[in-house]
Length: 623
Image 1 (spheres, rainbow, N blue to C red):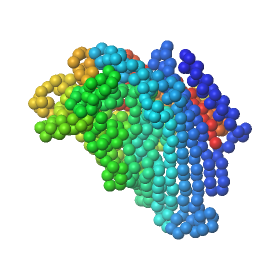
Image 2: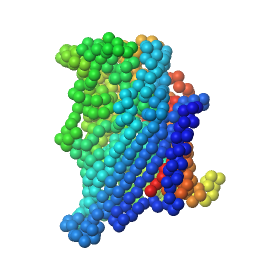
Image 3: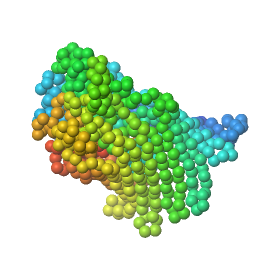
Image 4: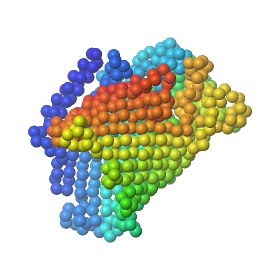
């Protein structure tokens, strides 16, 4: 409770400071002719409650946004004086974001004692097993990071966006060039067509969605890209036809993810480098020339890197240049005469791993005599015989929405995509990593889709003055040609037996470690089986009170497939004045059938985030 009071005092001080800075008459932006300046200061505090008796402060994130807009070219003239040939108009936008999260200074001892694997460590959870092995609490918490690492984590200074929109004269072409976000699709939560910019999931996973409280804009990783839009005009009876395409000339990176003890990392420690049961310690790395000189692993040998200079969940085997790392996408958009708005899309880009697919991020050398010899050489140098992969994937999709004003007064939305060549772990394929075993990979195709509705509805008992906006979405993933198998049975087969089975797909969240070899009933290996179908639905409602100054949102996300689990939430925006907004929210992660059996789901609900229910308080001062 001392920590609780300390953070409440800190938040109160920040809130009072921001409020004291607020002018008496709100000014949303500052305009100087064609130049506009705007931004905001924001502080967000999160308190996690794993149960009704415990609280931990896991975030005190203080953010500053500054935005510069400049209509430097209007009606073909610069400075309203100089004519620029070939150009009709142009707009320049620059957006900066600076962040400081104080928990890395004030509460570095926060710790989740149980990871997603549950009591799979011989009947113990991860923390209990680590203590038994002689590891100190500090080693497993943020406090164990070096000061330089903590400094890097607590600050985030980014040029978020910096681009110019250029409209050409005489041809219906507009070009946006620079650091930017490209947003396609119809979904409000789990993304399908919105994949030009992978996500940064290290702050808060996807929990600051949905709008109006927040949105994806803060979570996308922005890149230097070029986007083109060619207006086709009316074609036959179809209106608003345009062709849009983009090119990312090498400035791409995968979804940014973190592990425990980061408070909103993936709910397990780095499977390669963590000192308790990481794949780099002993096991296949027992023949490495690199010796651990101190700590509970003293005199053990370890690996220090992956093959080809790759970094797990950070960088694959490519250079960030146009020849080796380009990404492209194209979209055709139109509106049918009966009101259906639609688009067809195609992507050819590297797999980012942020849409809920249970993919394989690590490719280990297949087992054969040649690779066995190569692996021995690599291991002796401290190189793990595998690499982080981000393969190119072909994706074809479409999106549509239709407003039915006659019968239901509802907007219906749909989105679908077909991905070709997603890497999935296959336990029937053996690799040189067999202490413990890391499976090989099979590339599979997946069909994914979403159907949704939006409807403003009068509910007089809730709001007599305005409607309640209802929105619902249903998502599905379907694995094409998923073999029927029992992973634990296949794992125990001989090499010949595995070849006879051919294929047995598993997920990436429960791969065995030196501490979880599947030798006891409490710790079976490969429980994270790939299912034919993964499903999820969301339902939310919001309305406006007091002229729009109070906006409550109530919603729920439910995963009925992975041992029924859900995330109910509520949030309220209170506009104190035009430039000061307070947001209060609570999110609950619920497993109706208990938490004894781990739930290996990748949607980010109560499987991956079990025990992470939280209260959020955010204050924003806009200028």
